[in-house]
Length: 303
Image (cartoon, rainbow, N blue to C red; front, side, top):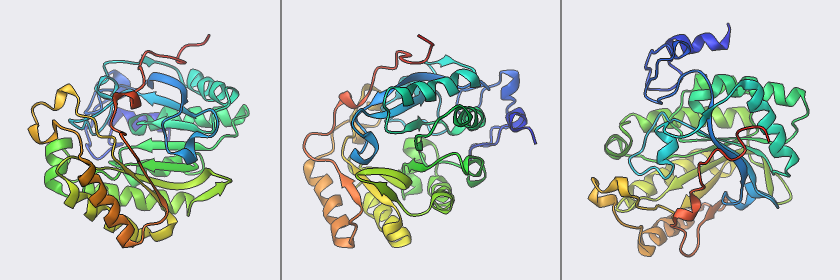
């Protein structure tokens, strides 16, 4: 089957919008058929095992199937920034980042653009792309869609945001988040297996991120318990404290504050008590808008 035909009646993500994106219709992700990219550049603010000496070669895609109310990348997740490009140009971007010394190719929120991404990766690999490919996503994905990436992606970098359907519904309009995230993670681990390193650099495997939200310590503990007791040492876990209250969370007063050191410490201590050893924590004052790069179409057009 021509993969592009999947966009004629799009059910790539759990939203099942059934829109014809080839005809220019937009579903929940606010995207049509063409991959829209807001930035393609070396990015130093990922986990150390992903950054290498010069940074991860991040490609930020516009649109999102989740649309979390606290999103740090609000402008692009709402599809308000970015430039539509061709598959040919996408492949060129991957090769340009490799030439710049990127540690890997890091595809950020590309779930809804999986069709052109697959084609772009195949083309780039034919032309000499040898870097590990990272698929960086929110975890709200279908296993059948992820299966399209088999053999093209080396590292999966999903979020596992919530355990509670109530929190997932309130903050991401996705009360079914946990069910889909569990299935997606199972598919990811099945594809790439346990984590493998070359020196300090991750070259294959699954690294799951969990952002601790203000007032949600109990939910974070449930997420970590599930991850560790299901996958053990097969995966790495990144426990993140960088939550930043941005202007659009003012309608959610419980989120309109920073995470306290005590809240984050409770989650880290719980992880240690459970025996989680393969992972990363953030030390010091991590919450900052400096983690948010400018979405100014750097690297998107040919120079």
